[in-house]
Amino acid sequence: MNTEYFIAGRIAVKSERTFSKLIVRIAIAGVMLSLAVMMLSVAIIKGFKSEIQEKVRGYIGDVRIFKFDLNNSFELSPFTPAAETINDLKKNPDVEYFQPYATKPAIISVNDEVEGIVYKGIDKTFNWDYIRKHLVSGNVINFTDSAAAMKQIMISQFTADRLKLKTGDSFIMHFVQDPPRPRKFTIAGIYSIGVEEIDKGFVIGDINVIRRLNNWKPNEIGGLEIRVKDFSKLQQVSRTIYEGLEMKLKSESVQEYFPAIFTWLSLLDVNTKVLLILMMVVGVINMITALLIMILERTNMIGMLKAFGMTDYGVMKIFLYNALYLVGIGLILGNILGLGLAFLQQTTHIFKLDQTSYYLSYVPLEVHFIDVLLLNIATVVICLIVLILPSLLVSKISPLKAIRFK
Image 1: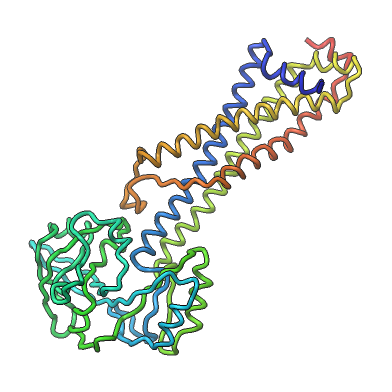
Image 2 (image 1 turned 180 degrees about the horizontal axis):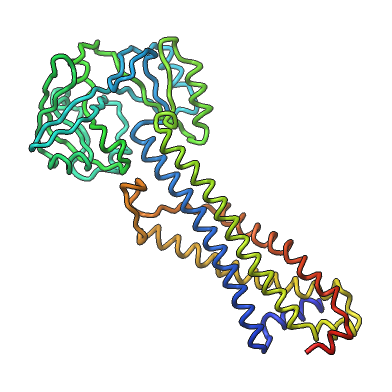
C-alpha cells in the first residue's frame, strides 16, 4: 500500500476539522474559477477573431488584384487580366476561388436623405454563399436576365434604415462623374454584415452598369477578389500571387486593406496572454496558501510521522498528493463550468454585445479540444512545480517541537 497516498486521502477527504474542510473548498474553488476563466478567455478571443475575420474577408475577399497606377480614388482603373494570370490563379492550390469586380462612387438621394456610397459591381460568377448568410430580407441579384440584373441592387441594413428603404423599393442613384449620371435601381435584397466600414460604405450591383457608364470594353474589370483556402497562410499566398502578376497589376491583402481591424484583433492576443498569466497566478497563490495552512495545521501529525521514521521526502509526498487531489477536483469542476457556459452561450447567445462597437451582436466562442487539454496540463504542471517550495517546509519541522506544538 502507498502509505503517503493513503494518508493524503485521509487528510483531503475524511478530515473532520472544520478549518481544513474550508481550506480545501477554497482551494478547489480557486482552481475551478481560474481554469474556467482561462478556458472562456481563449474561446472568446478565438471566436472574436474568427467571426470578424470571416465578416471582413467574406465581403472583400482575402487578396485583391487591381491595376498598378496612381489612382487613389474609390473608382478602380480598368484592365483586362491576361490569360496567364487567370491560369496561374486556377492552378494555385491555395486559392479557393476568385471573381471579378469593379467600384464606382455614387450618391443616393431618396426620402429627403442623401447618402454617399461606393457601388460594387459583380457578375454572374460571384459567390453568394457569404451574402446569403447575412440576408435580412429579399434575395440576391438574379443574373438569369442580364437586362433585369442591371436594374437590381442590394444594400445594407444600415443604409436601408438611414434612407428609410425596404426590399422592393426603387430609388435614383447619381454616379459621380462629369456630368453625373443618374440610374434607377430596385432593391432586390437587404443584408447586414455587422462591420460599419462595409455596411455604411458599399452597395452591390451588376458590373455591367459600371462598364456602360465608363465606356469600358465587355471584358474589362476593376479588380479580382481572391479567396484563399487557409487564412493562416494569407501573407505567404498573397506574396506568391504578387510575384506572379503582370507588371501592370498589384495585389493587396485584406489585412492591408483594413489595417485598423486586424491591428485591433492582434492586440486581443496580448490581452489574452495577460489574463491567462493573471488567472494562473491567482490559482497558484490560492493553492500555496492552502497548502501552507494545511501544513501548519498538521504540524503535530508531521512530528508523529517523523518520530515513527518517515523521511522528509515521504512527508512532502503526502502534501503533494493532497495538493494534486485538490487540483484534480478543481480541474474537473472548472471544465464542467467553463464548457457548460460555453455551450450555453453557443446555443442561446445569452450574452449580448453592442454591434456598433464590437462588430458582433453577441459574445462568440470557439472551443478547441487542444486548447482545453493544454490549459489543463499547464495548470497541473505549474501548480505542482510551484507547490514543491512550500512543501519543503516540512523538512524544517523538528519532531520533538512538532509533537509539543498546539
